Image (cartoon, rainbow over the protein chains, first blue to last red):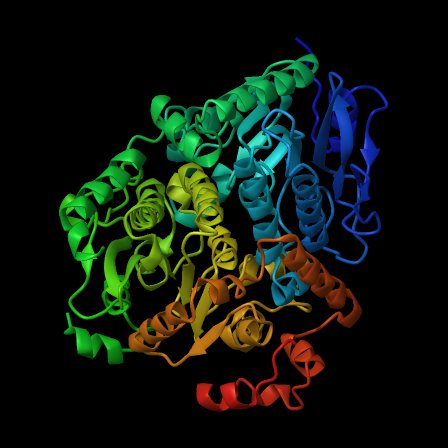
Amino acid sequence: MTVEVMIGRGRDAIDMIVDEGSFKENMVGDTPIPSDIGPGAVVGEAAIEGRDVVVIANDAQAVNERFPVVYFGVIGMEEAYKMAKTVYTMLHQDADKPIGEKRPLVLIVDTPGNGPGKQEEIFGMNKATGAYQLALAEARKAGHAIVALVIGRAISGAFLCHGLQADQILALSPEFSTMIHVMPITSISRITKIDIERLEELSVSNPVFAAGPQFFYRLGGVDELVENIEDMRPAIARHIAEVEDRKKAGLPTGPMYHGELGEERGGRMLRRKAIEAMEAEYAKVADQYV
Amino acid sequence: MADWKELEAKSFYEATARERAIGMVDEGTWTELAGPKDRLTSPHLPVLGEAVEFDDGVVTGVGLVGKHPVFVASQEGKFIGGAVGEVHGAKIVGAFLLANQVYDKIMAECPDEIEERRPAVVISFETGGVRLHESNAGLLAHAEFMDQIQGSKGKFPVFAVIGSKVGAFGGMGFVAAATDVIIMNTYGRLGLTGPEVIEQEMGKAEFDSADKALVYRTTGARHKYIMRDANYLVEDTIGAFHDCIGEVMDLGYAAIEKMRRIGNEELVDEQLALAELSVELHPKDSRDVWAYYGNENPEQLTEITTAEFLATAKRRP
């Protein structure tokens, strides 16, 4: 097994995953994506095992000089809108193609957060991350296969922004120091005022607040853990094929499917019960409303 | 609890989640779904020695606004800050699933009545986002909300009503941004990053999180209204929100779809232009942006009544 920490190496990951020399940055089909904005987002088209794919990754080495809070993989306003534009460009170009011919979208995830600045709040960072998520959900529902691979950090809202709207989500296993969490246990302890020893002890068996890809696996938020660097490319190709097969068969993918998976794996046992209670109770009064 | 007419006159800001939910729909039409009697409590809080609430901090149900079946999810800030956990999140998702079900039924049985009977989802936000005690499950629930909002497009509108103590922050800040229509009272606050984190990132000189007026100007309803990040600014009564929803439903779905701020490429281009404007203006304060949009006395805009504000404030074109 090859362990090589990939944190901060989004561009390297693209090279390791796509066919050699195939990545065309800031191009989707014949359409250029603005190259002078959002340096923290790397977007473009490439091939995986000969097939054209669109790639969106984080660049942790880039600093956005116009937005001082955007560095080390942070997704700022420009980054998120650039990512959204990439998705819409792909979506429009492939609008008339059937499932299986629409280009897959590969998300390479290594981001610690969304831009946490004053300018960002004044102009609405919430809209930027929301816009990208809606674009991803639209592409997924339109039939594009979207596969995310967490290579480094997938922290809280930034994982929602870049990753959790995918059809299927892969993560390098914990040996790669992959970080998936909302907050580290130390911060959860400080805010909830629950003893850290107690939290650490519980986190061994309770995946619901513990930090790490293996816990998200148990909650259904990660489909598969990738154990070797060499497996990144074949795993992505395999999941693209699987997603397309599921879509052709009308089977679920994406966040709602991950909810079902969370129950199957024993991590989220009350989600379905709550939904079913609402459905059953509504059925009794439905005549009053329609 | 006060009767319905009293609820309509009651301050939205002061109201509980259940009062807001009941008052958001027409008199006598409310049915709570998965309410406290079901005792659908968080399985994760007791493990940490925390108290549970029988509705897990969100009141969900259905009522009518005119002939429109409206599915409401109303968050209670007094319970763990209105934060989203597994059950809380599933109940919000349930509201969307039922609205889809109703939409499909109307389209199957009486498609020509869709405009007058079109369902809606209303979320009354009072939350900082993810509940840390069950953070991973809460995070995954947010992804389901975004999926459901995108899935609602072309079918039924989703309203964000914001005007309670906690505001709408964290992940729920972008869930609100992704809805079709945002209605706020003057006390409403909407954003992504909380003030303490901004101060930590930028330093106290740039952003003092203890300066309440500054915090309000940055994320508050009046700023959001000027930016067109809120579609409507209403008086602080539950009835004002209820009436606004009814009036918006009467405008028809084609008009409602135009109220979105994100959700297609043209809107992304518009927002990207705003991000570029933020570089050009480099505002020290939201007031600089208000002035840029033609408000000659920006410091007065937070001193006047809502009615005066609505009459005088100049919004982003």
